[in-house]
Image (tube, rainbow, N blue to C red; front, side, top):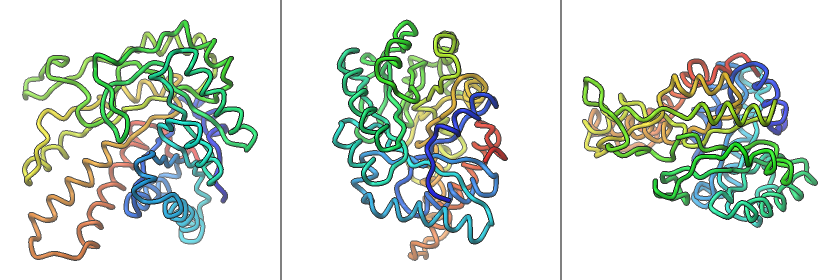
Length: 327
């Protein structure tokens, strides 16, 4: 099965009350773990590549690995896995064009740090080129805090999406989906202790998402797919494993999964997940090194990492996104 765009995926997700997982990929084991989970759960899949991942692994390697995952699904599972390849946080027309020319089926142009008019201008430039090549475009309105690859925004520089701006933005740019800011945040340290409360175990509890903004945006953009960035939950069991095996991740906290499930039942059709993959893989590898200090074969510890990724993604597909058996 060839790569697909997200257009049909999002249409089904919107009306079906679920979201598609957009998982960031950096190497073979991550791609294999994600793809194996999607195959077993018969789930549509978005594999997204950041500017940093593209620089680390090289465009051609990532595309060939994704192609191999699709071929593996067809040959060994008898399943035509629907996969869209998406550029995450493209910061320039040139980067988006390079990914479009290189076979991506979806790109994000993130001009959210610019003025409203400059965001519109750059987003429309990307849309015009992408649509001419059969590629869909995601843009962002509002600014998320946090750190992820090249994206670095201080909390005081973040801003919620203004619902009164979304209709004009979508109409003038022609984008196919819109990432909005309702309180999610990039990275594994999404909130400071001062922004949170603590439960009876002393674990940070983040402030709730602004569902009022999401509801108003959905009202103004009926049947239009909304995207959540910075939506990893940073599972505390993995943080605990990391810290118990030589790591230092104090007060790492993410978005509660029940809030993401609620968003997926509304207008949110795409939920980005990156940090959860990182902590799952890191926890499994750190534990492997402590449990097996004699091991030196990368296949041994990376194999554990791949298994952790697969289990994590299966959980997300079934319990958070609700997109199992939707392919």
